[in-house]
Image 1 (cartoon, rainbow over the protein chains, first blue to last red):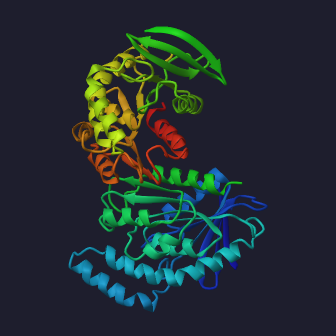
Image 2: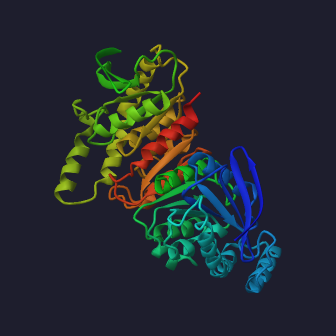
Image 3: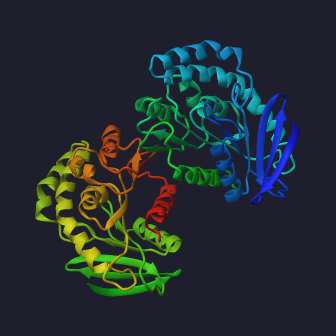
Length: 245
Length: 245
């Protein structure tokens, strides 16, 4: 783990890092010392580790809860090279876009490939981050990620026992049924009632398929990008419930 | 409006009252003076104005927000005489119960009758309560009520412009489509994913039918009576967002 830049503002220290060739950012209270919970943020398609919505969410979780928060760029985003494995999907996306056809299904299939690449990257990032003395080896870990962040997050949360609570959503059942059924930790699931990318029934079916005894669906009107801002606060309180000491 | 008893504990004053022959309870911070928002609590079938879950919720809203909170007994509950209008439904409920058949549909039809009786009672209670100098004529009003509390609440919220935000749920579309479409205020809608009284699709359809631009569905696993306790906090924060000055 290599750190490259550190800035502090409004009581929050942001550090840029890399684990292998994966770039990341980690936020914590200024002067943080000793162990604390860690929340991972998985950005959406087109986003990156320090996109404004990611940075704002990270600062909120740090300020409200005193947690550490980290994000990494997904393979092919944030300036990372586009994996060769995406090429057939990206060609299909170009064709569908030109034809004005729906993209949800090809996004979901590309997401399966993205997850296979990203899961070991997230696990290496967790290893490195929990090695920091201001996070610690026993840190309870949370994961937030919707859309691409859930294409990666659903199989990641299913595979990674250090993750004890997750906010997921804006994805459908078709490519995620198997890992969804293996999730057992508490989940808050975000669904957009008029999502133009994920059909409503497919999103409801993914919520239904999640294996957790405690799961809560938050559905709101509007399209894929219209998740209301009050869901940021809701997710913060969800992580407080499940990760705070 | 006649007050009959007043007790204060843990910083909350509970006053028992009646408006006409409708008994109620109102909670406020001890020593409350001056205007404040008012949240109305509509109990479920089998409940009453000071059932433990109602009282606990009232105290939470008072303590967290400084609001006034009031509940009244619905017609036929809490010791009030059973309206003659309920008799055919109650006979049907007895027969269905004896036969082990589902009750949701007859509960919903009886709820229509209950609402017709209860709406003017709630409106008279709002008139009286907003006449108190520690609530005030301009108080923004919220309404919380699920199950029977929504059989009454959906048409009440549609009819009563003083109600500016509502938490509703645990009811289906069939008897409530028309008033639901007339609701325009922000709504938090509670649905139980495995509700044995309200079929899932009927509950989702009622959420869909609500006319409000801002509405949020909170669905959780479990049966009709299994709404998780964290939804109490969520509703409290919903009312903070929409009613606090």
